[in-house]
Structures are given as C-alpha cells and as structure tokens.
Length: 340
Image 1 (cartoon, rainbow, N blue to C red):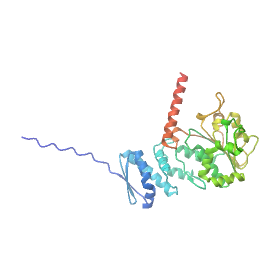
Image 2: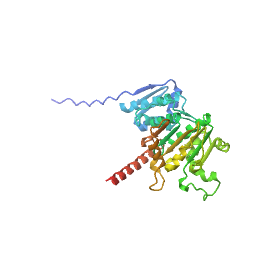
Image 3: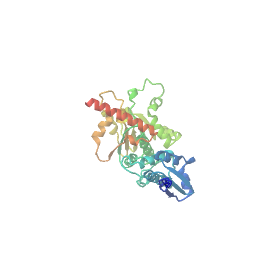
Image 4: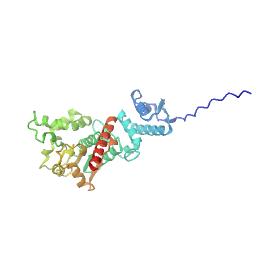
C-alpha cells in the first residue's frame, strides 16, 4: 500500500506589524522626510521595514527591533509637535537615545519637558544624547561649567550656542571667546597680518558655531561694536569681566597657572564655560595639564558643574565615534603595557 504523500511544512507565521496612527497626514509626511530619507535611516539602522499610508505607518520586523523603531518614531513625532524641524541628524540622535546609551533610555519628549532646548536667532537646538541633555541643563543653571571629553560630542558648539542665547536675550552684555594659542607660544608677532588675522585661525571652531547660531554678518558687526570679544588666553590677565559670558575652548592646552588666571577673571553677573579634551593636550611633555588640575581642584564645589562626555556621545559622522573608540582602546593597551 502506497504511503500518502508527505505534506509540506507550514511556513512559520510572520509576526503582525506594529501599527502607528498619527494625528494628520502632514505630520507623517514631515516624519518621513524628503524622499523618505528619515524612514530609510531607521530601516537601515534597525533592520525593519516601514510602510506609510495616509496617516498610518506599519512597522515590519523582529519584535525587539519593531518596538525600538516605534519608540524612535514616537520621539520624532514629539519633536515635530513641539516645533522642532527634523533633519537626518535628529533622526540619528533619536536612534542613539533609543539604544539606552549613557544614562539609559531618554526620550526626545524628556528632553523637551526638561526645558533643555537652546534658542538662538537662527536655530533651535535640542540635545542629541543623554549627556548633552545634562550638559545643556548645567549650562542653563550654573555659573561655571566644564564640558570635557572626546571630539565630536558637541561640547564646544552647545556652550557657544548657550553663550549666544544669554547675549541675545540680554542676560549678559558681552560674549568673550578665548583659547590658548599654544602652537604659536602665545607670541603671534612673527605671523603676518593684523592681530585679528593672526588669532582668527585658532578660533575657527567658535566662529563656525557663531555662523550657525547668529549668522556671520551679524556676529561680525557685534564684534566691531565690542559685544563679542575674541582674544587669546594670555590677553585675559589682569582683567575683571562683569555682566558677560566667557567661553574658554581647548582648555587642555592651559597650564594650572593659566587656568587659575582665567577662572579668577569672573566678575559680578558673569558666567563661564570651559571646554576641552584632556587626551588631546599639546603641552610640552612633563607639563601639568591645567584642565585636569582644575577638575581635581573644583569638583563638588557649589555652583560649579563638570559634565564628562564619552565615546558613545559622539554626534558627528558615525565613523568618528569608531575612530575615537579605536584610539582610546590603543591608549588603554599602551597604558596596560607600561604598567606591566
């Protein structure tokens, strides 16, 4: 007697897609981005498929990833509802926040509800990581704030943006930007050009931040009237600065004496922001780092906050985070060999 033909195994049941419904078709269009660029970023990062129709969005994929995509999309919708214009950078930030990095899960709504948005004439800036959120909160609250950590974490840009906000909103009368001009030994006489032409190349990152937050024409006019002052650190000696906000960048290139000199320029009604990366010091070998010395001396004191960024907080191109991590690991291995 012939055996009955074997029946083909039934295909595994596919999980039902997660469905999201938004308040309007326009909100979903803004969420998708031009040519669906925002959805493409989420799909590529999380390995899910997103299908939009009308005011509804279906999310296909493994349960863990679809849940994460849902959280990201809801975060981005919150940003849109609060007047934030989405960009690919904002989408990447929401994806980072969804991954439970430094400080655990942090929603975009949490950032907004925490009042940590910086408003400048040209842009409205929302923190893009948990550490950035803590940093902006510190910049808004404390008189002296240190932002320290690797390149690409936004520590200088956010400090400059908050300084601009304080100036434009008339909470201070003046903005002072400074940094140690270590490469020229703080003696610029041998360089060609005027004083401004000599010092300007060293402050280019700060100028870029001013371009983005005020606009070049406006801040250059404010520089001419004295509302914005730009000077090398050596020119701060002997001054007392009142009703102003002072930003010291590249602070890892100061000596303890220079750092003390700068910090004691603080006058009535003034604020002070200090940024730097101790791993990038250009000081001569054997010279004590003024930034490290200040952190050790001042940590825990009233009205002073220290925010430490990590490799996972890098918000530039994703490859930058990989590069920073690779160099950090190399330095750790060298340290371990020296200890052995």
